[in-house]
Length: 159
Image 1 (tube, rainbow, N blue to C red):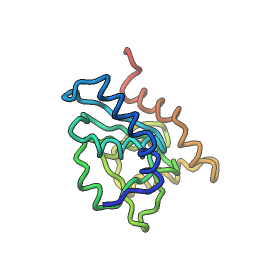
Image 2 (tube, rainbow, N blue to C red):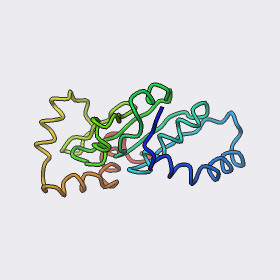
Image 3 (cartoon, helix red, strand yellow):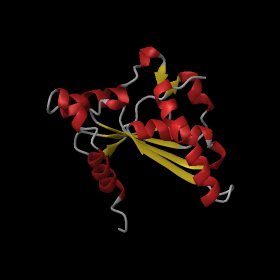
Image 4 (tube, one colour):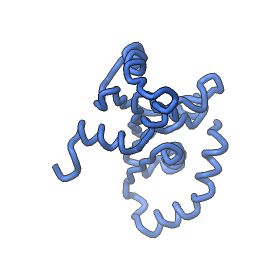
């Protein structure tokens, strides 16, 4: 099964350090949480696939599509995938190239609220949220927007 070569190369570059850190710091039976934003989300997804027995949960924010459709069937990790309205990064690589997303979609609407929406509702919301032309997709990718939405939905740490 294939994953995007660029994302895999990034993980391969740091993989020896990841394993060394996990082996040094954690008991092998200790469950871990993995998270990442953007390229870090893609890398987190690949890392979670390699560490499946040790992963309690995976959280990604604005992550691109990582692997081919068949590859996702092999990934048996609980995964919450956050996408903020018109964030452009989750739209690449394109579906037509054979790439797909893994995980449960947690969609942030144009009001900055986490919502469960049908595909048609998300399309309408994306149109409503179109604020700044081409830059809207870049602005919606900002991690500060993801933090604000999750704090709004779940409360700030310590609340």
